[in-house]
Image (tube, rainbow, N blue to C red; front, side, top):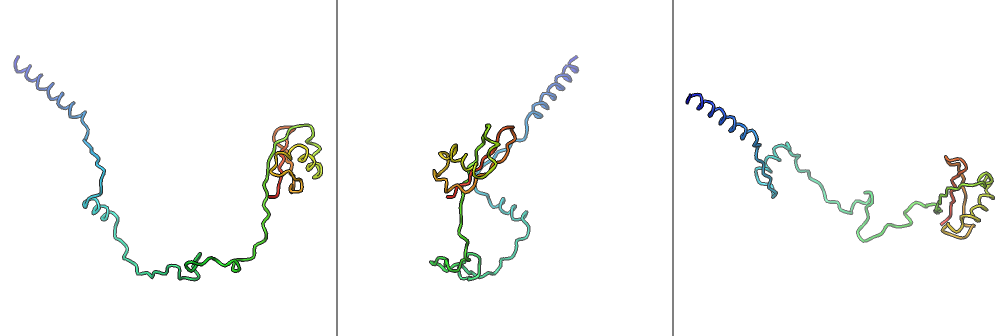
Length: 153
């Protein structure tokens, strides 16, 4: 009987020891700091052969035909720039309008009158002479349009 109990006891002890070992995973520790010699050597080995140092000349701003090159302390000459056309800048304001008057916005004069009567106070200027054009486009909803007002700045 003693032999059987000893065998059962040793088998249960082995199972317990095995379950404790199975529950423990590997221990990992992370430390932040500068890379050591071994790490840098490993990175250099993995990077492969380095390109040989290239001999170059230090040109700085002395290359006259390099893009954006200029002599130190000088500004680009406006006379060298290509002649540009004068710019006209517009601000375009968009309004969505719903109502019975929409069908009557077919001509430019009627559109300008509509803007003057209903939208002029919403524009950056109160001068209709600065309103360049008024576009009207049907909207996806029945009885609605998009009104775009182009104002010269």
